[in-house]
Image (cartoon, rainbow, N blue to C red; front, side):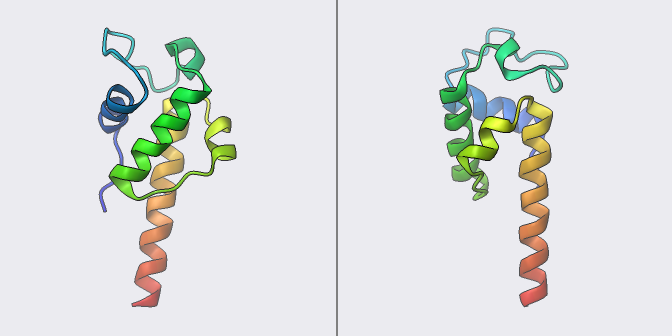
Length: 92
């Protein structure tokens, strides 16, 4: 499994969370809070659903609500992916 990139996250936001790709997600937006980028809690839940569909990573709703920035989402998803791969490797 490949790790999720900021560009992947942007794509998922545009496809699932109602982003219109009007420039809000241009440049270095990784450290900006989702509220500053115009995303509410419903958009974050849609983002989590898109991540689950694309990567098979399930982020609990409580965890999603604590992820304030795109870089926090990337860290959570990639950490879960690495942990999942490690568990699979250990059982093989």
